[in-house]
Image (cartoon, rainbow, N blue to C red; front, side):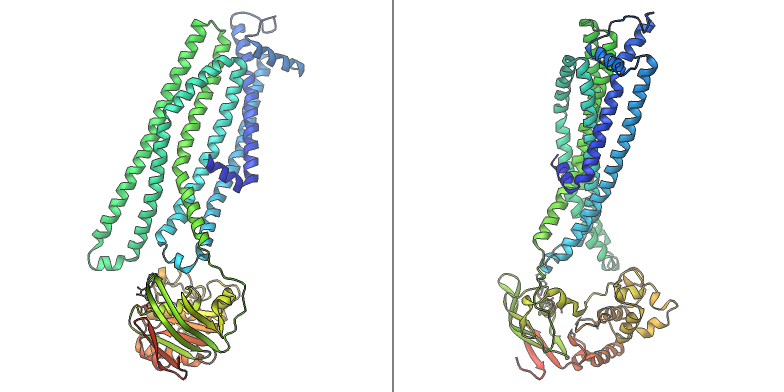
Length: 576
Ligand SMILES: Nc1ncnc2c1ncn2[C@@H]1O[C@H](COP(=O)(O)OP(=O)(O)OP(=O)(O)O)[C@@H](O)[C@H]1O
């Protein structure tokens, strides 16, 4: 029930309304039930020829109590009145249950939405080093499956409470009729529930296993789907199939265990409860000679109580299947929260003179530095290009300039102010960034350029597309900038996609433009066009580019060659 307490503290008002509605639904049902004993008593006596209004003896004190209460309220306890009370009780109960279920449904939807948003927000706010180590498939699974299972778990938990309240009300009426019979039934019922509890534990284990396996399966699935083209091209799709088949089989096993334990609990409980009720009726009627009316009411009420308690256990079993997903999601949220990036409220950056990496050392893994004591000057208003072999640390330099990574030694200075003293949000708003990968959103060109920023209009998008040399091929499209780019931008060539990405980086008029091998997919003609665009932008903004291609190297004011953890200036006015 730790799960339900966690939900109650997160949604106190929804929970209070739900619990009150359940409580009053229970009371309404109890009132209805209380009319059952006098009703059966009168019906039986009518059947044997006694008048309902003669001085008949009540079956027990409880019946007397109900009749007294009715008479005090000025109601004569006839069959019609008693039946009306039962119908009223059932109607009220149904209405109040509807209110409670509505609350449960709304809260469940809110649980899933809040968990998804919280997960997404903490992930987006986490440090870059943390974020890049999270498999995308795992995140997708958390947002889709685990959030959904958590909300189902809440619904199941709320249903446990509903059944429990009803069982208590039935128990209360039964105690009023005969506390001895109720206690005996409760004792036997508890033994049955205790015996079958191992099936609930089995389900909990199967649920935990499912959570783990689903996470792993979806991580692998996403990775595999992202690399389907080379697999198909080399006819190696069976390798992916093999990995996924193993995981799916294990998931299937866990699911079968859960199904079996649920079915076993169902079958075992109904059988045992029926035996208890039948045995109890035999003892009461034959051995103890209790009145038929009392035994009938007890059989109905105690039978219902046992059935509700059984449902409590079954519903609890369902709840524990999804519970592991909730805790797994909560742990993931907490872990990401611990890794939150501090963006600070420091000095407002200006970028008046330039950026300087001052004797910077950086390593991803301790003892294996990628950059060793390097110094790089990126003068304001100029184009600085980094070249060098793959893995020499060019992207790492860019991530240090953006502030996604922090150097272990040395400083990244913006106009001589260390980056960690700056207002990091303001700094990043000054950057236009074009990554190596050209993944576009499945939306219009305009949306891909502005990313839905309400401060940017169609004219801004057109200006940026012109600056990026993309306007020529877009202007001729039937829907111009409102044309969609297709799934992941597949309607355009690699070079065209890169130019749209460059337009996205230019649309908010950045002070610093970063191109991380952004011209690698362009043919020499288009690359030269981008080179000319950069030359035109030079002076208006500072440009830092990684490039192996001639145009951006030739157009550069400063060129650094990176190799073996060092950076050597091969062109430029300043010395480092
Ligand atoms: N997240 C990471 N964790 C551990 N090592 C990393 C990580 N990212 C990069 N590296 C390592 O750091 C080194 C520099 O990587 P980086 O991406 O900066 O090189 P690069 O010069 O940009 O390469 P390329 O031209 O191939 O993009 C490489 O040896 C790489 O394996």
